Image 1 (cartoon, rainbow, N blue to C red):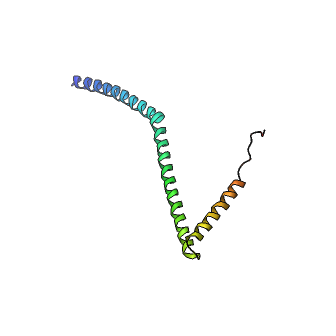
Image 2: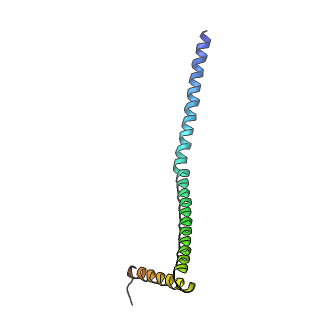
Image 3: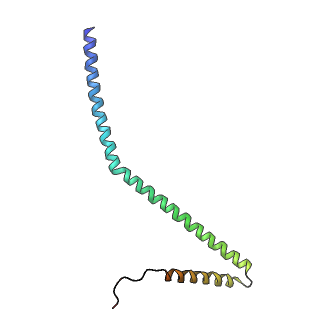
Amino acid sequence: MADDLSQNSTDDASVGWETQITDRFVHTVDRLRALTTQPLLTASRGVVFGLVAIICGLTVLILFSVGIFRLLNNVLPGGSWTAYLVLGGLCCALGAWFWSRRLPDSSPSQ
């Protein structure tokens, strides 16, 4: 009976030691992962979500442009050249507005 008690206390001490080493190892691996892998996962998620947003935005822009062209082609008299003329003028006006809003060149002129 005394041998059983001493054996249980020895097993408890060894289990505590093994658990302590395992916990320290798991803690070290978790800390290493938090410093290395987690930022990479966050950055890759940002890149993937950004690419998806850009692709969706471009798709919407293209479909909107096609829809506007078809609408103008049906509404305006004449052939499809009137729709091209209106959209070309709109793009030129938008480009001229953006050109006027640009920042002045900060390099010295010679």
